[in-house]
Image 1 (tube, each protein chain N blue to C red):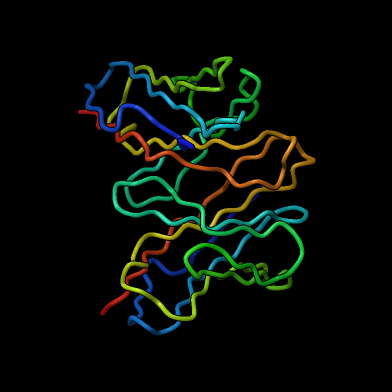
Image 2 (cartoon, each protein chain N blue to C red):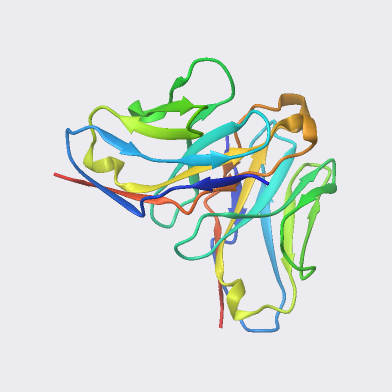
Length: 116
Length: 115
């Protein structure tokens, strides 16, 4: 069964500094990995995905994520944080589609707080 | 292009009642999934509909049921509501098996409160 771990409940960073939100996963076969962001009282917004190819994936709003197969990690990064990046971030994994219709399995979320 | 739309946005029900939540997928999408997000938790998969059939189900009791219509819209029904059913219910749409590596798009959710 698939699983995702987000080891930090909250990450604090000053505006302008780089940020990293950590995610590790467990899945049989090659993973499909996703990052979503959730603002208060809103649904989830897609940021980026890793399917195959380059280990560094670029996404929306200047975010990027690095896939590391040996460490089974998919950490979210941004070179320079903005106060408006403050939100709840979810990592999700989906198993190979050749096993049928697949659900997304989410981590518990990491709250990012960017201070001015 | 409208994204995923859900209705209603908020709902208050009494224990034991039944509720129906609705979802219209993003234009061009044919697959709808439903998730429950309890306060302070990540979304949990309830079930997925494709071609008007339930294709996969998460660890939820039979009180949770759904339907998909020919226009791909979907309903989530919950019977005999419990206090623990209070949560944000999220609908996600995507392309089915024809485009296996596409991302899911989420609606803004329906906040259900059971009192």
